Amino acid sequence: MEKSKYIWYNGKFVPWEKATTHVLSHGLHYGSGIFEGIRAYSNKKDTYIFRLKEHYDRFYNSAKVAFIKLPYTQKILEEATIKLLKKNGLKDCYIRPLAFIGEGAIGINPGSNKVNIIIAAFKWGTYLGDEGVRKGIRTKISSFARMGVNSFMTKSKISGNYINSVFAKREALLSGYDEALMLDTDGYVAEGTGENIFIVRDGVIKTTPITTVLEGITRNCVLSIAKNNNIKVIEQKFTRDELYIADEVFLSGTAAEITPVREVDNRKIGKGKPGKITKMIQNQYLEMVKGISNPNNPYLTKI
Ligand code: PPE
Image (cartoon, rainbow, N blue to C red; front, top):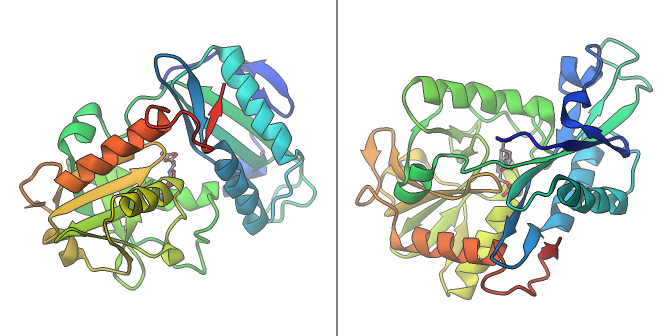
């Protein structure tokens, strides 16, 4: 991650160093915040934010689920995001909108504490390493389960929920793996710590239904790329051993983009390198987000 000049903070552009908050902010103590992750891409000519509207649609849905009333309209936040990129002179970057409950009442009940919103944008390279994107990553099933749907509401990117991912990620890295794969409370494969998951077997793609996982926007792109290429996709729960015997496994996410998985629990996936379908989806995804395949794609917001 590379610092940029300004952060949008409650309606104003403030210098990066000055975007601070009170230590008694409710969000800091109890995780009462919601966030998004968006990317912008450039080709030789133009810069585009990818699926800006869908990310903010989800931001408002997250807030609704989390019972957080956002003090700005979606239009204001979308426009602020575009201005932020221009003001920072950013092209390829990651955008992080966050709403969090501020200081005031202390204790679990947030009372009428102010809701703050920030939007940060910065350069952020590959999420799981350049080599990981090219050659595939090594993963391990986590000893931590994804929290049950009645504890952890999966349609909301609630800050506090992510401690579950933080535990799993650190455990995986400390054990020498690149990423953790998480099972749901019934023992079926759910997702990565910050990515949705797909397996390919005999030319058919399978992915977790959205019941226990985040409704990934990249996941949705994978489904349409598969459809455009006449590849069958089944949304169905699957077990960890289906991962082991899959021909291909890959992860999808705004930060992770399309990342091939070459190993699960010390078992090589397929030939131990990115498979044909994974590579095809990865290429088509990158051509789409960069506006190479279709610069008039309605998912692209030109800066
Ligand atoms: N599952 C989880 C748990 C998740 O956090 C993400 C996004 C996804 C699936 C994929 O969703 P989408 O980005 O809409 O395709 N994770 C974000 C945060 C990563 C982070 O480290 O922070 C992201 O990719 O921006």
